[in-house]
Image 1 (cartoon, rainbow, N blue to C red):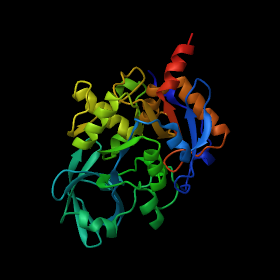
Image 2 (image 1 turned 90 degrees about the vertical axis):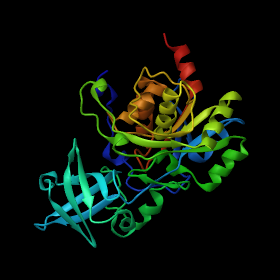
Image 3 (image 1 turned 180 degrees about the vertical axis):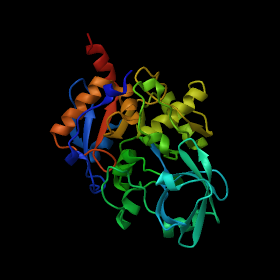
Image 4 (image 1 turned 135 degrees about the vertical axis):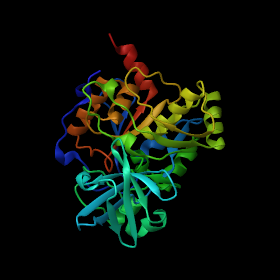
Length: 348
């Protein structure tokens, strides 16, 4: 497969720079072979059936972007990626030409030394554990296509209402649409809710630079599935309820666990480098709520694996025509497994 096969045209004005109020975003529903039905995220509970299981990612975004100065006075930007020791983190550092081994970076009341490099990540050794300083020094790591600095409002809005486990450097954006009221309506519809954790890292949004899709390698991301969540998934499958994943991170958590568990989703923690592309053999997920993703991205490839590349790209064209808002702060799409079966049946 070629990376360019997952390209599409998107006007700059379609990229959401500010979030809509929670629960007010639009929803494009793919539940038949057509271009999609137009709805709103508040309609999601009505799309669920008694016995379905809605699975959320309860990771919490940390203020992982830090700004400091090198010994020469130059401005340095740090994006924390993964904690590897009590005072040590792997991070992205800009500008990279200043981040030579031994370079000291001064922050307010804290310092870091560049201890080395592992592939495209720098190893930073802080003068003391950095976590207690993040609320004071850290910034919410908004994605680069949001062309503005983060604000105090982003600390609340770039976080799901069910965020519990700190560790992500990007939000599981499909979850940003939910309000407590919508979650109550999900349960009132007879569906159940389970929570898993995948700490969103570089692997989720790292660009695909290779011409051939198969040459791309995902970065490792950590996940955890509690015994309660594993039991809820098993029971939903036993009663023929659908597993409805809220976001691609939930998809990768569940399908990674199923691959390791021989088709079952066991409790436990682990890490995943799973790269889902068309042709993937699905074992767990029956429906997917997700935002609209960047061209050529691993996320678009995952959704295409779930619903079919041509159908997804046609739905994206429809969304552009209808003025949907794209990416992290944008609108959402719901793909139901029935749509896949119908599309398969209708194919020549």
